[in-house]
Amino acid sequence: MYQYFHIKEKDYKHESLIVKLLLFVFIPVIVIPVIIVSLQHKSVSFLEKEYFEIHTLSYSGIITKKLEEKSTGRTGYIVLNTEWFERKVPFYIYREIEEGDSLVKLPYCDSEWYIKQNGEKIERDLNSFFREKYFSKLCKE
Image 1 (cartoon, rainbow, N blue to C red):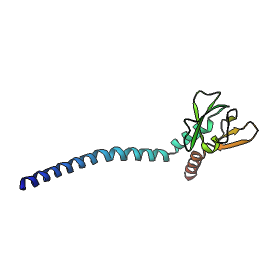
Image 2: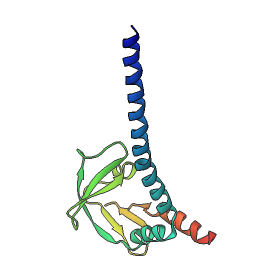
Image 3: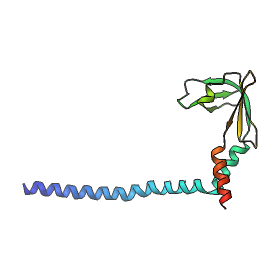
């Protein structure tokens, strides 16, 4: 009976050593990237890059296809006649638009406009998150 208990105790010590070694390896592997990403998202240069990337972007076209099969609960996908890739659209707008409607995003503007065939316009602010973060960071400095 003593031998059985002795074997169990050795197994326990061995398992405890393995767990400690795994923690020493995996905790830094997880924690260090999280710290880097959080610092990057707070840096002014990162916020400036992301803000101006969206701010200077421009596109326009007519919606040629609504991709029903790819649409999920919060987003829908559309294809414009001027682009070969799908564009993600919030579902509250996706339900309102139809094929033949237009989409316009002007350069140096943070909004995009969906113009329906009947002339009705839906405006969507694309850059509110980075704009608020970027300008609040600039005001602090």
